[in-house]
Image 1 (cartoon, rainbow, N blue to C red):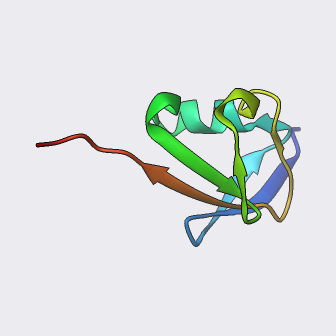
Image 2 (cartoon, rainbow, N blue to C red):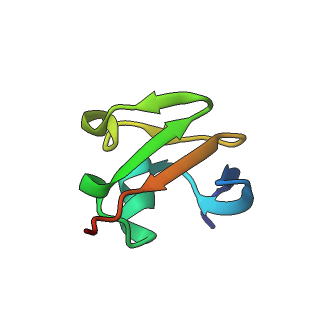
Amino acid sequence: MSASIQITVNGEARSLPAPLPLSDFLAGAGLDTRKVAVERNEEIVPRSAYGTTLLVAGDALEIVHFIGGG
């Protein structure tokens, strides 16, 4: 039986398996890490740290997805 954690993503509660790196969460959500900016607990997460940043219970993520256009 795997453990789960509760986090908030863009204001919505989510239950996730733990431990879970931020990069795995983004991939599972179908988000291209080159086209998003992530704030975790009111601090920007550098793209280079997505793979080493483990999500923990109570984390609050704000994710902005960049969309190109003309």
